[in-house]
Length: 268
Picture 1: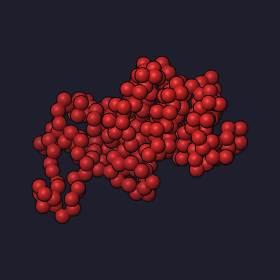
Picture 2: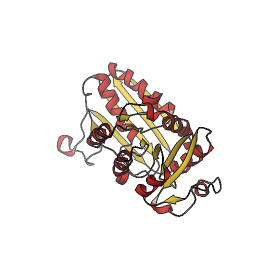
Picture 3: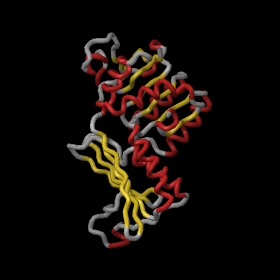
Picture 4: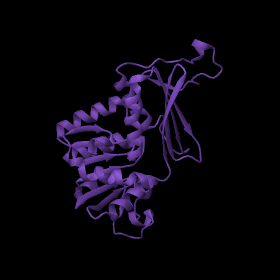
């Protein structure tokens, strides 16, 4: 049985993780950490009834008594880096679904993880279809000069662009081996009446983040060339689709070499 700690058990994804870990025959939920839900039973908040796992507000003290092997973090961008550092320092392998980490953040965490000989898996998306979307986009990137990404999420998502969009941009830029051609839009360049209308820019790829009710998680990668466009899109209908990927990561993360591994594909 893999002993698992969940950070952020009262969030939308955290509740699904609690249910998935508790219900799987190869994993055991041994602790949960969440400041806003401290004192409650993790199972009760997840809607599966009391399971005898109380939620603590302090990660360090929970690690000392829970003897966890793996921790799943679905907290918030403001604390995720500190959480990972604490987990790695205690020899616990993190599986991180919280987004908002920059390239420099990942580099610092990678150095610490290597020093402590602990594997870390940071996965912006745990849906298998989303992983395939990124893989197909990376293949297409070799044949197009223009690329844009539009990602759509619910209004309560804190970071923008999403971790999936960020990872996709890096992947297609790397596959191309160069920056994409970029049509600007800054007011200084084109007299735009709405500065920033062209979105963010990573390697010549404009990224647009939509935040509003009615969406869960969706992404479209658009490639363009003279006389044609190619659209590659993934839509998430329910959060249940992430759980097979989360459980796979929980069971395999300790088999990875020490350091940060960015993307679920490292355990597929």
